[in-house]
Image (tube, rainbow, N blue to C red; front, side, top):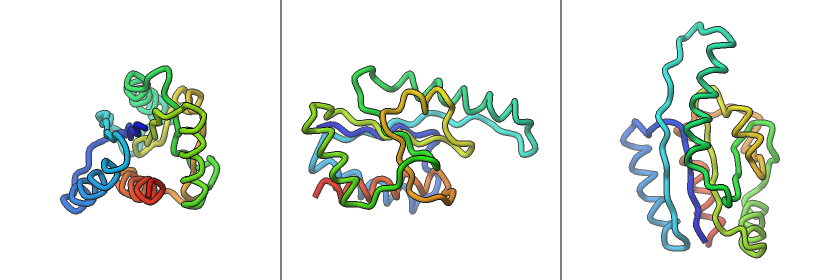
Amino acid sequence: MKITIAAVGKLKEDYLKEASGFLSSNISKHCDFEIIEIPDEKNEENASAAVMEAVKNKEGAGLLKKIGSSQYVIALAIDGEQLNTEKLKNKIRECKNKGRDDLVFVIGGSLGLSNEVLKRADFKLSFSPMTFPHQLMRIMLMEQISLSLK
């Protein structure tokens, strides 16, 4: 099984980089694991809706270039389905059993994911109705993947 995280932006804080390294090594014991980072676009604080949509679309295009046509795409989206750890484990197992064993989890930037990325998704996953910083979301996702593979 191969699991990829395609994320907008790089981890900036040392404590997040350390957590990512630790979790990456745990996940890699159970599957082929990779993190792909797409540069985040500059966004003005008081940008118009059109400018924000353009930023999401540019980041989305970068993400879509990294997603293979045969990969099973799980987009992290606030309006997605909420799963507990056991149900996420079952979802990953179900994909593997159905021959969809090349998964990519997609994390958008600070504005979220573009409509094109959401359309490409095979499944939308929500961790909560709350909004989390996308850098922290990557660590939370990695922890859940790690737990799901044990």
